[in-house]
Image 1: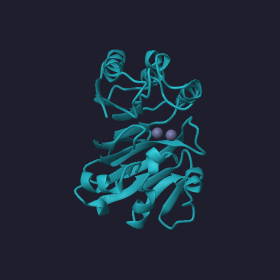
Image 2 (image 1 turned 60 degrees about the vertical axis):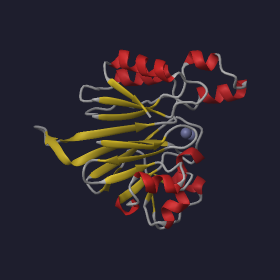
Image 3 (image 1 turned 120 degrees about the horizontal axis):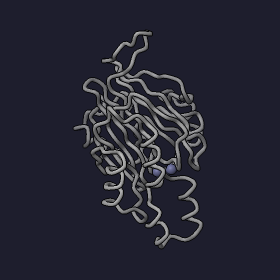
Length: 241
Ligand SMILES: [Zn+2]
Ligand SMILES: [Zn+2]
C-alpha cells in the first residue's frame, strides 16, 4: 500500500493510505489545509477518515472534515468524546467488526491508552486476495496501524504493511527533563521501543517489506537508535515518519 505521512507525533498525526484504487485518511490531527495539500486538493477522493481516539493530535480538524462531507470512522466512545456522535457523517465502529470503504476494509481493535474507547486499525485491500483450500480469503495487502498504546494484546497474520508507534526508549526517558507525573503517564499510555520490538517479533512479518515507525516523542526518543534497533531485531527496512 502507498502510505503518505502528513504529520506524525504529538504535534499532529495524519496519514493517507492508498491501495491503487481507494484512499483513506488515518487521523486528522493537523490543519485541514495540510491534508488538502497532501492530496493535491482532491479531498473528495478520500473515502473516509479513520480516527483512533479523541486526543487533539489525532483529530484537530475533525469538524472541517465533516463539513466537507468526508465520513468519519471511530468508536462510539471517541465520537462521544468529540461531541460528534449524532452527526450524519459519523460511522461508529465496534471492535472486531468489518467495515468496507471501496476496495478496502477496516477492523478496529482495542488499544491501551488514556482515552475513552481507543483503537487501532487493520486495513485490508480486498480487490486482490488469495483463496485458501477452506475458502478463506487472504488479502494480498494488509496494513496494521497501531499507535498511542503502551502494548498490544493482539497478534496479526498476513501483514504486508505496518505503521507502529515507537514513542520513547528507556534510556531517553530516564534522562528526560519531563517531571515524574508526565513520565509516569508516558509509561501507561505510549509504546516504548522495547514493547514495539517485542510486538513486532511476535507477529508474522514474513511478507512485510518495510516497517514505518510513527508518533516518536520529541523529547524522549533517539530516532537513529530506534531505527537501528528495530531493523536489527526484525531484519526489515525501517522508515521513521
Ligand atoms: Zn497521540
Ligand atoms: Zn493519545
